[in-house]
Length: 457
Ligand SMILES: Nc1nc2c(ncn2[C@@H]2O[C@H](COP(=O)(O)OP(=O)(O)OP(=O)(O)O)[C@@H](O)[C@H]2O)c(=O)[nH]1
Ligand SMILES: [Mg+2]
Image (tube, rainbow, N blue to C red):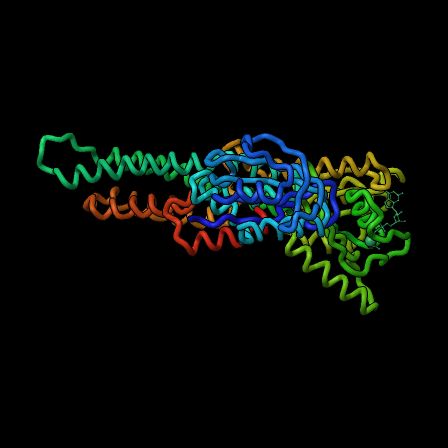
């Protein structure tokens, strides 16, 4: 008989409610032994209120119990959930009691693994569960939620079905070349494989954005001293994180914080104002600023619009040449004194994706910068056309391999090579795509996928 597994499904700590989840054939008998008021006939999906007891009958806590009957459960096995108070002690005692009644402690991800093994989820859906739990903002959450609903899995299945049809036709051509069965032409094979290749290409392309949407972009605030970088950082975070003074060189080290803009996770790095200085500590800070610029996805260059541009502004602009830049012309409240020619000169050096005139000391001023960042993100980084978005490195890697095989197959057909060789490549692509949904995934792939899960999921 299969094991019955159990774990605390909610995070450990103090909370209103905590859940112990049990899955497997002994679930119902465990409910009967630890839920003191359990009736003889337990109705599935019915909520029972009563008390959790240990195996000596001592009451542990108040508890709500729900029994869900296989196969219509998350794992596909019988499941019982015990909802008690969110107390570490209470939940641990309930879990101990559950284990004493015939369950074993679940491995991380084992509930979801069983759901996959029981055919309740494909592997891409199982992976979406962990992405959903770990999502840091709305956009990655909604992508994970779509994947959990099976949209990516369905597309992979559909592409595989088309390749499977091609393989079947190829087999007919190969096996019965001289008979009266209608043969499919090379051109038709080519057209179909190229169509599927195009779909794979689109998915691979979506992965560029998918990674950014999941992990967020890194945004570096740069500029010379005293232009308002730290004021902008604080404004974007909505808290006084960085020290702001009118003394040039206030920020001496880089400061990194996470935020959300337009539903996307974002990492903002405030940097030391770049200038020539004899101060050793500041010099180190400036070096750090420069390396942060190198790894940033988007550089926000702040200049002081109330005065003239200085050599340092141009030097910094030279340094960030090639980077995608949002130019923030700050201190508009003091009047804009930059000349048209200065503005054009600095703009000509930068790969400017947007320009904002603003006063970062005000909430509206911060709002303008926020909006500009969001626009650059959605117009420049997000190249989604509403199709499926691949966020998972494993999926991307499999898509690339499958696409390479299809390319090989297509090239062989174009060169009118024997169908048998092209067939091998198309078959490889079919196999590799199966890894994404788990149909052809081996134990090693499964172990890697589920080892990323937390306990109780
Ligand atoms: N009038 C006006 N002053 C501002 C504005 N933004 C920042 N300041 C002031 O400019 C001074 C420098 O601001 P910071 O945010 O510390 O500038 P910084 O670029 O981080 O400076 P360093 O850390 O020295 O490189 C402070 O006195 C701010 O109050 C603005 O929009 N308008
Ligand atoms: Mg600063």
